[in-house]
Length: 637
Image (cartoon, rainbow, N blue to C red; front, side, top):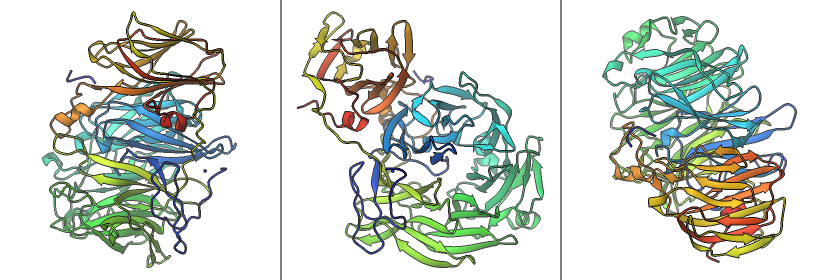
């Protein structure tokens, strides 16, 4: 099978961050002066790269009916996930966007709010498959209602989707990524139709060409838009591993004229015309295009983020990396209107991760504050209680680009705090999120376990109260079932309910109906990609996710081969169905899988069976449990 495949807003004292709490809702405050911010766990298993953005965002509409934050990540089992925080209701949900994906941190999802306020989520494999995937929420602002997965085919491979909608062209999506020949690529897409279909109607086009591109040179790009008519692109000549002098360039893309321009507005090329602008890390190129080069220092330079200030002057966060890759330094690079001003921020150590022989250009990471572009957050090595560990610091510059303060935010952390990201939002308050834990590689393989990290945040993640005895009707250990051995449980009718199971399906018969609740059936389709479904009467709602993991990558060769390996079937897993106010939700291992509107369901007779396997635990409630309650169920008791 080689081809298939926080109350009100939140109350946090904004300046700094204390040491970690370990539970999702657990918050520790530090008694040090000025260090009184909460730190929460978004997820214990997740990671992201820093070139696909926005990997998190906040959306608040003018009507005041939507105010939510979305944070996306991928775990080592290939689950692409997101946490949605509703600041109006103080509620958090964790959603399974896509199971059984390539277990690679380059594949984290990115978010776009459409004009109709639905949320579109893009994701793709790491440059070895010619397509994107996306899902769209079926209700405005609510990613717990994601529709089916759609495959958007391209003629080229894809990595790092960065989508934009601009006011000069509100009827299209502009998508930027690393594509054609491993180079920055752009295309225009139609807005999704009523069936969630979109298509390319301009492009894809390669944006620039690195002079040595035919030899495997890979420019790395970060994008930001002015929201109106321009997309700014900061990029390098190549990966800093590839050459010791790696320039940083800054261009803009005019979506009306399709022109690529330097910082002074001089045209470099017209995108799609058939002629590409060639870039090169040489004195000759710099002399020919002086306003296209933002950084030409003789280092293995790499970019982390680009932003634009109120005057639409670009600001770049970057790292200078020495010839031997052992010394990394963070810099703020800013266009003043006449020149590029560069400010040293801090020594960043070397590569942050635990594997000494790969990716020596992986710094801890640096991010720009979305509300104040003179504030930066960076990950640097600090000697503490557990030895030298990467901690977060905050850097503030004045109007002249001078560093005026440096403040350590995290203290005595047992594990590294890396790859910070400031979430865009309103109210001028920085929502900071970052990776925490051990990191061995960007991909899971027989050589290394990948990225054993979680995601932290400097704001509370809401958690509801847990009352697992409230509304409990049945607590059973049903045991063995089959197509012929059906176990039936009769309970009093209820218009709200939860049925939760711990079960296993025999791997040789990995299909069948798992349970029935009146007219509702929940089952797993047969086939190499077993997917669950809900059937109510004659209507079937199929999941986009696979009943299994990408653990098979652990035994396959490291890298981006483009292959899909056979899913690793679940041994024991947890399933829950909850129903309230006409909304049926299914949870697989605690994550929201499907959410559908179904009228007139109720408890009554529940049948377990129709598949071959074991039901190790059953809980039936006459109310809809929260996701936190579903995650905390203990079937051993």
